[in-house]
Amino acid sequence: MMQIEQQQQQPQQQQNQLMVQNSGSLSFSSHLSKEDEEISKLALSTFRAKEEEIERKKMEVREKVQLQLGRVEEETKRLAVIREELEALADPMRKEVAQVRKKIDAVNKELKPLGNTCQKKLVSEREKLRMKKLEELSKNIDSIH
Image 1 (cartoon, one colour):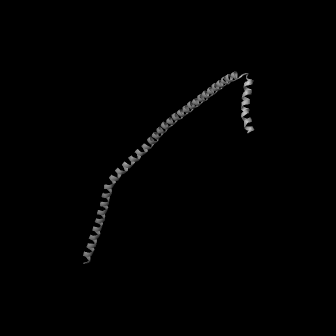
Image 2: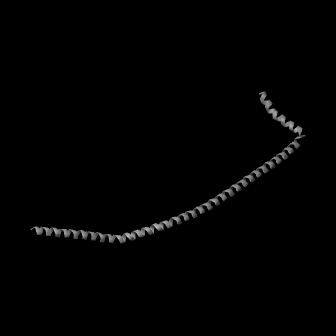
């Protein structure tokens, strides 16, 4: 119990010593309020400086992001141009292939009737040969009788 009383008395004694050192309680309390005011001003100015620093860094980051977005847009446009150029390079090849296919189709159309005619001629020639052979055989058979 005595220890508790001593612990409670210690802060009181320290406060009394401070008042005596600063020559009276009024000057001590006014001194503390000026000191508190200076500390508050200092804290406020520090806070404002930090806020300004944060705001400045935000602006720097915003500017960097805007620059990056600008670069991305430029690169996107550049890639679109390159894609168009590649398609333009591929298009002539496609056109050439289409032209060659058309020519092949045209030649096939021309060859089809010629092929049919040729087959008909070959067939008719074979038939003529067969007919000749049949006639010869027929004559041979007639001559034997």
